[in-house]
Image (cartoon, rainbow, N blue to C red; front, side, top):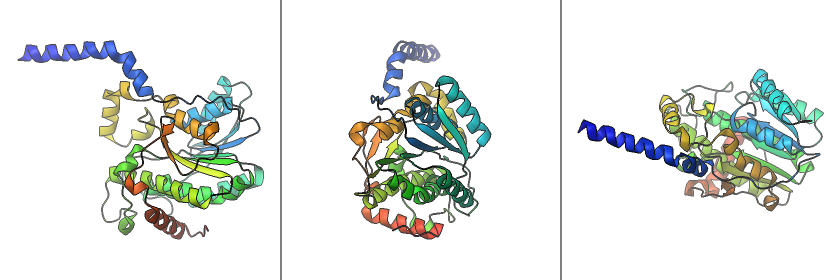
Length: 317
């Protein structure tokens, strides 16, 4: 029996080696084929110091855009910016401090941005946290809903006027396939009654999809579009808070996208010519993707919008 087991493991290993190139090609997913240039355009990317955010910044800088990297850790942001400059001659990249877990930081960032930047053509809400232990933002929000949804909600609100004045402009919201497993728990949005890190993450990613849907409705006719996306399962630091996810990602790394591959749909939504008038949609692998029924609910989207405004103490008509 033991010999059969060992032989079986050996056969699986051999097959894996033989088919590894095919597995990698499949795992890589869709590629942005657009060669659109962004000369004279300004792009803002949150969480651009690592992972798919950095790769997105690299790609858009290579297309001639002025890329502003909004990062919580400025030192790491500057390291990423230096790396981009070494790869792209003449790259226009700059780093600005932004902590999405602190509304004071978001407001300070936006005030300076509006003072110093005249145009904003692409806003990519990329930063996020995943399955972290229960913690709260500076303002008392559960960290995942606070950063992944409320932080970007406030940032977009503060910059929406500039985006409209810069039209045609695009907003790109990085969500996840995990939205399929999420529900907006209006009775306990901050997970005070009970906390499950995975479910809280799924809720925040569903919130991204619902925010995109409602914002698209409100932006009709403005020249500003907004779309959400699933980047794929990507080798990144995002799973660092989950021992199980880290182990699974290590074991099945051949089935995961590299950060560059994971950035392709973000780039696609930001530059593809065929999306110039497309808004309120969800993408994966540079193509339209399925949205869970709870992500298509206009009623839930409007309720979440109102609750978000109330929590942040803002009015957004």
